[in-house]
Length: 482
Image (cartoon, rainbow, N blue to C red; front, side, top):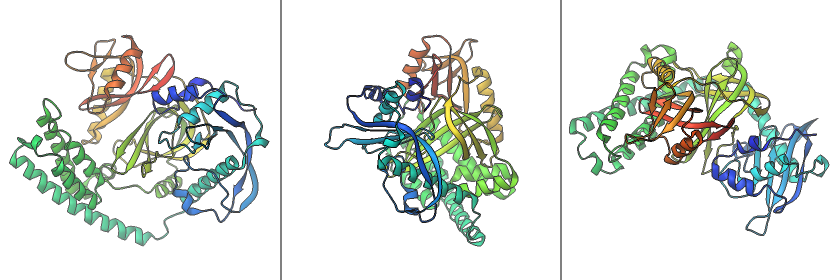
């Protein structure tokens, strides 16, 4: 007998309020057929599985047989499935792996989970779907088997060491030379911008920044490219834009000069700098090294927030976690290419047990989920601090990494307050934080103000030099993504 989720737990998975509303409309038997739920026997994958399938968006994919072998062992996967009538002639195939959780739907929506997966889960949570694992159709069994095969591949790749250490070293040297050339080019460009003055930058259009950003991409310094593109949005962005643009230039100049002294920096700070510029960390190598050194952190991690951003041709998902025992905050990044949403989706407001491996950094935050132990479960409202403590936490992190833009914080007993000078996040003690309007959406601020009703509530977000950007609020004990 499957333990049914509450409706609040299901709605916490929704990527936004619109998806919650659309999913709730589908939480009725009318549009559904072929409904079922239960523990489905799934064979352990063996040799011969399709490696190309590993790089596909598995949460979007229809399951089908791929002819791979199996070890003979069988495990049980908890799932819910059904066919939902849509606008076309063919019903959408929708399935949810409750142990992930993960979802598959043949609808064209980019949102994960889509409204059909949410509606299916809400219908199941209300007792509207009978359990009968034997009735699971082939496409459900095949999708779950494919997922299990891909997970095994990931584990096997993480356990393997580097294939050719010499080739890895040679590629790293070539990369360093390209980045150094890009750093020199950007340094000259920044000098020219300041020498010419900022007057007229708002009439130059976006092309100068985009051209230099493209050069940084060619130099494999994608982090610098992202900062240039953000700087290009400053001119004409409102009163005081020259100051904001000059701040961006100053931070980039700091990064470039630090790169000139890369060999003399302490290893954690050097690692932070390389990550900021655009060096990618090999997750397999990170996990392998952590296993050798015993540095992974096993804990029950509460999902504080999740947000998607479009960067170039990628969708970047930021997922913030907090460990219950360690007290550490972690940032996990997931990527989706070609207009697809990232495969990794962790429900905000839930907790799960996992081993996390943190990247080397002066102010360690970025982490990789090495292994999960069991499915997510509801989490309580996180403990927070006051606004003054949050500001001090950012200052301490900034002392470790002088180019750090923001730091994640949970605020307790605060409210969003609009006034003539702009929005602010005010605490009951009279201390308040300004809102970073470049990263905080207007509708999110109004929603936060409506939920707080002038009274204090718990809010998670990022605080930096330009202010606070809310990500999640807790209303009546439930996590609400902003």
